[in-house]
Image (cartoon, rainbow, N blue to C red; front, side, top):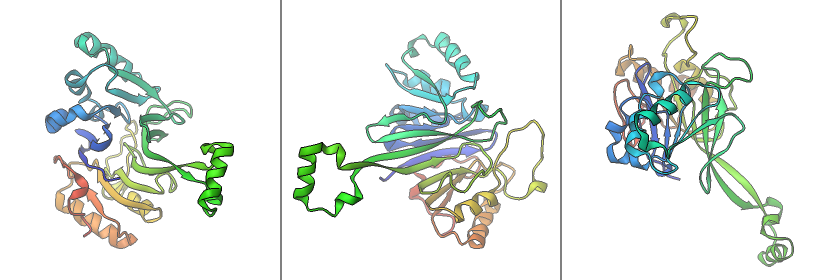
Length: 292
């Protein structure tokens, strides 16, 4: 499936990604409606990773302009109290948006956005909480298809037709899920298997270098370093990589040079795209990869 993905992602200021063909918005940072204009009307589902302001301050305007009966559906981490507060405020401020659905979600939930597209929340560790408290999420956008069971695929067509007549079509097929898009949200790199098999991985890379390059503040939430992300990607199956959420302390030249060096170091040949600080990018995947 070809996807048109547009977005903006600068650490501390704003992050959002629009998956146009699916009507999905990942995070809702400031300025998204000004950038998308009428295209924002295509947004039916919003998936918020966490309650940091740079990931949700665009919600009020998006909702005010585009709310209609039952839409948009705004999904947020189950135990984040910021979102019920936003829902209550927005409904008092703009009474006409009462049709918007606000939905608390957690790992294990399945949010069907189309007949063949389901979004799966995944716990991450951006926000330090107890084991059963969900305040920060990543998301997987999965395409679901029914395919003939492998043991039956070798049989003659007439035999399969007879099985369908005798036992029903469901006895001949199995569900197959493809990870179209993995969206990390803000999170440290946690394991190698999480994004394995992703057609497109959108991952944050807030910091370029080592701990010495980072101002560590104990109460702050956790982020990824670029080299950790590239190391992970080199060990799993990903077809295309989109990097964002870079700190604005870094120049475009330094970001691109670092990406190219790490692609060489880890033997990464898949297309790697990036959102530079301060820039909105439309149809990210139609651009030229950094490593080409």
